[in-house]
Image 1: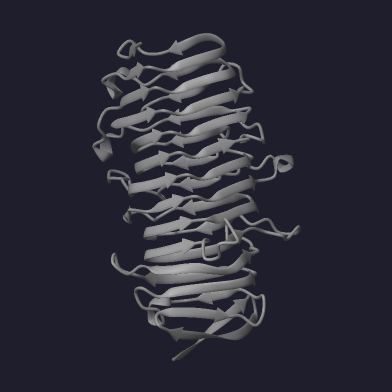
Image 2: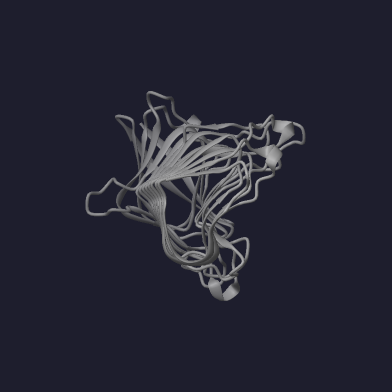
Length: 367
């Protein structure tokens, strides 16, 4: 059974054929124009595999509709390059789908989201919009202003998403002082007085992020597991407020474990969330903030009464901060009414600091 799809690039429109055989849709492209599917649910079934091949100007596939047992899978044949047309290289929306670049054993990162245009910067390499139950893995992202953006609108909920084993590098242009983000997850315009808890059980694991002009990894408004990522050479634009390796933003909590953050003129970690937060087994090394009044780890739990936020309870355990320079290694300025105190235990800290810990009276340092 054959489906007629369409490649659309600005005002140009050319056709391609897709063969539907045993739940595999093979896109035999005839050109390098953009791939646009307005409503994938009308031509794709749960469990289908979409196989990309070659080079694309951009890709936009809306309303992917898998199920928990049978997700829709987007995978590569050989090495796939998606070049990017401003403002986005690729957009995927829907539920229960996977974007995987491990379709060919010859390539570690078989799908490359990028921009080769010198005349038009791509704002975002990969946008997930209001998607839920989505997975992105074994992809490369480079030469764009921002890497992965997941920004559901107010009232939406994104559950059980998984970003892992990707290589995200050369994000933003330091000569232009761009505020590039490697991974950026946030809610879009939450309504006042209503919960802004958007992301539930969002996992970001085993990614490599390097050479980024601003913050490498920013998350907010949900529960996150940030685990075993390698983050280096960020804050290249030297802008205060856009100079951190990992940021757990407002209305967020979860676990930050086993990450390596190093080799940058910026901070290693910001904690701005609420509730129970675990930061354990992370290695911060060779960090030196441009503003020597800053710190390597900054904590300021921001309570949100309208979202019924629980008070911040941070466990900062068995981390190391080495060969770094700042006024303080760890600073906590959370207001007393926003926290019941945090625990700092088993941490190894060496470097050039005026003072190692700059904490509040409710905090406890053990061992």
